[in-house]
Image 1 (spheres, rainbow, N blue to C red):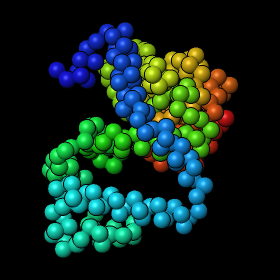
Image 2 (image 1 turned 135 degrees about the vertical axis):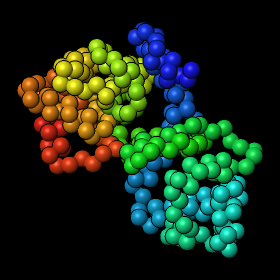
Image 3 (image 1 turned 90 degrees about the vertical axis):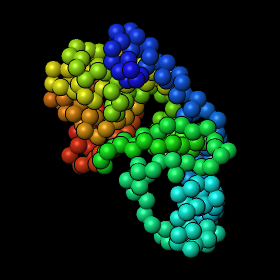
Length: 270
């Protein structure tokens, strides 16, 4: 029995405890180590001139390509097949000399994309799957933290919020068993100051309970799939209850934000 199967079988208090424990485990993986220094660096870099940014990007590309060509079997063989020396890749524009990498190639032989020993400690990751089948892959902790630092500096900060602000999330993780017919349809993640809401139970019958839970939680930021946030906004507008949830920011992702949906979200949440 895997962890997800175990989670679904647990009673609600145990599910909540497991969700909270997951947050405690994930906090240092995502926001430990270099996370804060990476955020400070990214915050400063946004004010750099275009020329300085380009030089920095090219330097990072050179370092990345050299590392991959020497440490990763797929790229080591690829450069040999192409008759290309990794040092010939000097700028981001030079990456056009390499063939496009698709998910199927990674999925067919994932071990060839792992670096040779000594192998750094890796963290299992999964893509969202919005363009098709989700892809499982491995990343270093530094890479995971830099990804979250980028989100912090380029999304949260630009939206006027920071990590630790009360956040209500509507993403794809099956935090509530699919067959559950009665609430609550959310779980608390205290380590992230987060109310994680299921996107799979947003029926007309359940929306009033979602609204009550959000009003009690008083999120500073709403974040999640565009369709889920839009559905909630449509309900708020339909019942005329636009004063109960007034977040500082609404951050949508994974799906296109069309003008009509944006107008509804702005009208519902200010």
